[in-house]
Image (tube, rainbow over all chains, first blue to last red; front, top):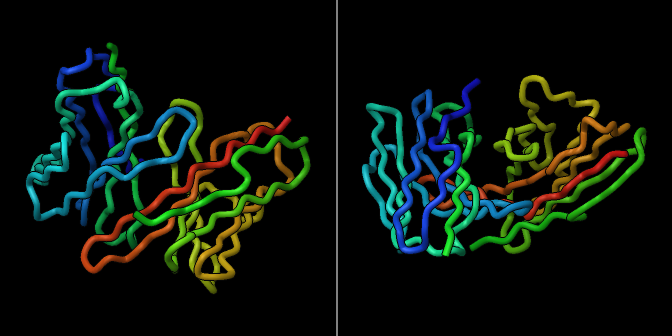
Length: 112
Length: 117
């Protein structure tokens, strides 16, 4: 399977703390994207990082990409209860016509 | 951002019936749409790539005769689950690709929960 791995599978933190999720993938990529999914809902696109980029920021989100290690991380700073959701990385793999391959996901729980 | 809708959001059907799910890009034209399936607490698995005006491309292990895909216009793709069985119960999500110069983004619909009794 080409599916990527995410860790941790589940993460529980208190509001105000930072949350870090990691994603590893298997093939060369055009870009890597992070998505958020609330329970039973569709996906919300968070951020896209291209293969020639190493770091990207968007609000409280910081994404890093290390293509030599085939890994990425998503950092959510100053987390809020509303950040509770599942987070997925997805890779746009080279030569696959923009098909996305999703990681296994991290379920984040932010408590008050 | 771009908006993708799905209809219905939830459907319950009897085993052996067929169910059609619609995916629409509301404010852009999508030459390519994707259909995914997601089982509870699992990740999304790509089922097929839907190309406007041509046959869909199915992923390995996905039965094309069971999951019929039609992409008749630049804003609409449909997935029909034929002769549905309980094991087809799942969350089906579509996405539409909006080319934007460099890297592309995919915009996801809200999903359709199918329950087959």
